[in-house]
Length: 86
Length: 456
Picture 1: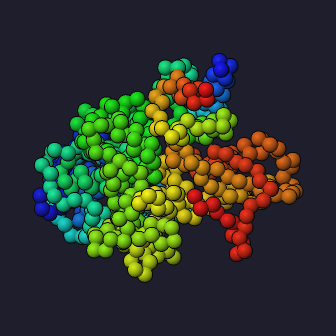
Picture 2: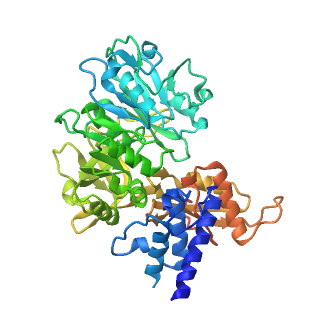
């Protein structure tokens, strides 16, 4: 389980970097308390990240039967995926 | 709006200025050149919403025609807009490049301020209002309205002056934002204008300081507000969603974030006007709204798309060879597909494969034309993929050309899809660029030789 947690986090981290690079945006250091809206990414960038995560991890936690709370920090975002994958 | 009768009593809140509309009685933003614009067909093209808002208030009833250019209208599209609208003057702000409309004989550089002037307000024209909406191949379509058609959905009862503070995440030059601008201006409220470079948190703080009571945006705007962690900064009485499908998740999230507010989702389009507003907290709309004769707004479902007939319909498209707006019975086809489930109609996407990315329309044909310009590509199909952040994103299926002699070695795998995406990125705005490209062996083509488009 722990290993899975680490791999979800590293997948998310590398996707943030990849999308920031593609969208020519400067990414802030990805600490758990970083506010997503201060990460340097826009809504479209987050949309792309969520779509690619669905392809790579096989699920979309936003599409769950129960409405999820929107993540505010990078840590919330990672937690949302880690909790859905376990 | 200032010409004749009592001047509006509201105010506009820009990022660092507040302007009372009553001040326009002895002041103007138009360099003292209001009379030069009388009877003219005027483009209003400013980076700053405050400038556009002031110009609209001053020029309604004065100009023959006002063309509301969104701030992101590309320089390349100015000539077609000028020609289609038969424009002969423009109002810009200092941030808008002068060369965009250098062919027009009159150019007024408006200020984001009410500058003291002797002005005589006099109503001489029933001004036409022209809105821009995206067209199939990227060039905008011009949609002709009147103040009467734009305001037909606004309730006529007058609230106590000063009791309402409106805001919108939208730009007021788009239909959804213009509805809020008109409500605020005509009903005597304050309007807090958004700014594209302002952080969501700062905007919400400013709206809260102004005492916001009514606020609107697309589901994507609202998701962004929820992600900012600052949604609770404001405590509006009324929260409105429009411009995109409002799914149950976003309605539930907003209900939880604003337990004291009415959360309403409205359906409107630039061409068809406002169809309805639903505030029962459920996605979709009651089937009983369709076909009820004698109502002010009439809805019908034909094929599987929603059609609307009302006083809020636009009059027509402008420009050479423009298509017809209404059918023989006077209905406008919104192109939005619906499906009946348990007594409610739910929106399920757009006809013709049109994709709605965060409230912005993307025509697949425009993106396909760019992809097909790659020497490696024979044909492509651009389609929507559902997305929880922006409603949808653009994806593409691509069939490779057999050979492309003279272009060197074709890249393989990811290098190839990256190159295709890069071609798109060079010429298209970000929301139109495919987020994913899939190489496929073939695409379905119908007997008539057209690409078969998925219906969602």
